[in-house]
Length: 112
Image (cartoon, rainbow, N blue to C red; front, side):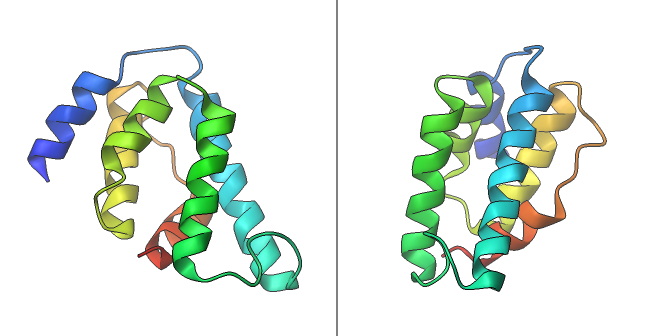
């Protein structure tokens, strides 16, 4: 895991939009949860593998080439729960030490 953190550090640079980009991740995770609970929407009836691919495509589209997007790409090979830990570590490194998103933690934990 420390190797991923090193790569993560290289991929990310401080940016004023870090908090906003982290919130994009959290907002999309809330969307996933809402759709699963309601049974409606693109995330509702697909397998965890397809859900993870859909989520990643949304992050690619919504985050563009931001440092958070690059960090997301670096963390992609990690298991879901470790991805969340890596995102929190990056948030702290980028000056958002108290960032937390229970919805993202839950959603990433459900990804393969």
